[in-house]
Length: 193
Image 1 (cartoon, rainbow, N blue to C red):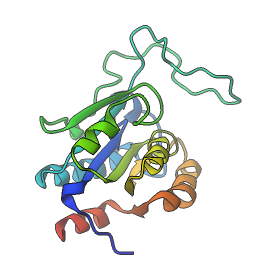
Image 2: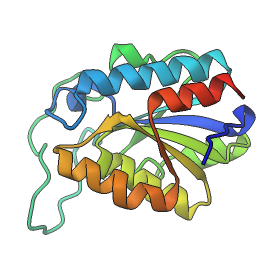
Image 3: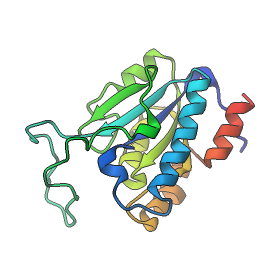
Image 4: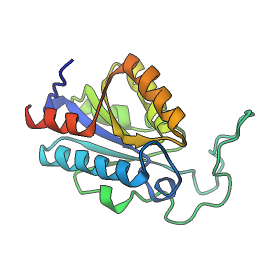
């Protein structure tokens, strides 16, 4: 299926490309590659005056909103966070036209204004990228699907803790809720819109 992008109705949503997360190991794409491709997308969206939502995750200062349910495999990150942990990496901005969304959970919709701000701008399609494919990106994608958004996933602008997690989301989950494309395919579609 050819990718067609309606610029007036499409936004870029970048998940957790922040200093505390980009510094962690990821696969199958390196953090540098993910940030590089995501910044190409952000630059193209800004050039076309399309919204860019930069999402970051951080607990409140008292840490009371950190999730800690009983689980077989505890999530990493239970210790003290560095002061710049939640800062968006410089390659991504933010610029004055970007929207900065702070989330406290995995998904970018839960407990934030993301849905409200996109609907007020007439957005019905999102291009998703970021780290981690199988956690922040996938959780956001599931909510977006349930809210009725069209989705395009920039496969080479995301990565997970390991390649198997990434491939599971990209090959089994995302094709059921949207379109999986490369950064270059998305940029080409933007140029031809």
